[in-house]
Image (cartoon, helix red, strand yellow):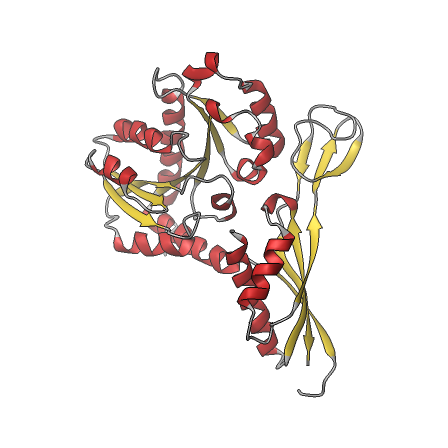
Length: 113
Length: 232
């Protein structure tokens, strides 16, 4: 349930942006979440709905873009993966390097002015 | 405003910013005082407290070591360390499955760190949440005992990605378990090509001197660099 802390942080940021723009309501929140963050989108949305109750972000929709891991393989090039693999998920080759998949960011908000 | 209509606001902001700020505060405090800090992360029971005991035996008589113990409920581990005559501070995280940087910053502010050169933080036993939260440490260490299985780097990739040192523990049990050390080495390197890997057994002592040497040289390097006349 570590999504609860994340949900609270999202709410804090959304409310401060909403205040700054004198908005009535937060309509939606677009997030970039790396697959390595162990965040289950359903859990996060459920918990966010819970913590946002009674605030201007009540009912706001979380739009979650998952960021994959990028695997660089010396034999076959680049591919995406949902975790850090032992070997290249495409050709099974060794000597890969894996980057990305760690983002945890609010990209944008849609506000009802 | 009140004119109605929807507005899109670009934010591009890390969700963990508050935690990042607290961890920068810790880093600053450690730098000012010339303290080298290690953050130990692993599953429950893989040997964090035992490794701390080994470290303490090495640093005995060499002055200031302080330990912060993170645990959900008890202070059993803190009591083990306290018996060795070392300053130890317990953080009970209750509902939180990792030490928050804000908690560590508060604990450090209440501790007597005069003369402390080495700070060891034992995080809550958990491979997921502690990986997400930096504590301003100089060296992040992940422990993996051979009884846990060799698929841990695939199952919990973030902690293997973000750790500087991987310690494979309980290697004396290798003849009795299915654990392919080379597979783990390969997976850990795929997650983090820079990771340093040590194989250790607290029972036979195998591998411990090399690991403790490494901590000592990392600590010495930090103290030397922070002793340089950069202070204003």
